[in-house]
Image 1 (cartoon, rainbow, N blue to C red):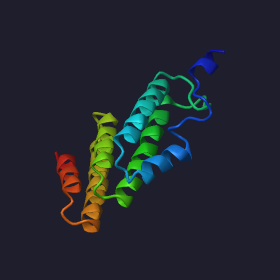
Image 2: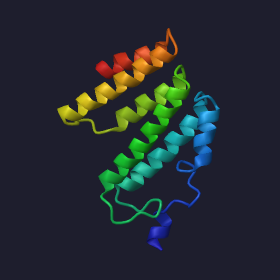
Image 3: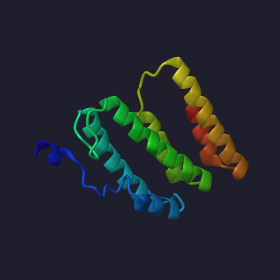
Image 4: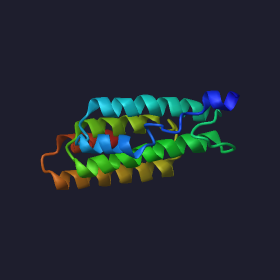
Length: 143
């Protein structure tokens, strides 16, 4: 009974292909869609970090669950950015996700993240010249 109280319904909108399609079909520019995803992700992260059961997964290490959730959402934001390189909303969502990660990661992890963010930014700039959002993201990643 306690597990049922903390488990999410099987049709979790964050994990459903339909919610991904809505975010993608909106051109990555729907603040409402991204903010809905943020609210659901915060709920899932709270459950994962508290050791609660979410999406029916038990017995896994909570930090790993939280990292998997963040990783999946980072991949979705990357897909949105690759499809719509000037989507300010997708870039803002990605920055929000990066801020949620471990505040004191090891130096090697920081280097890998910086390289990945710079590659994504440069690719977006190559796709659409004068891409202020990608350039701003690159500048913030370097800070």
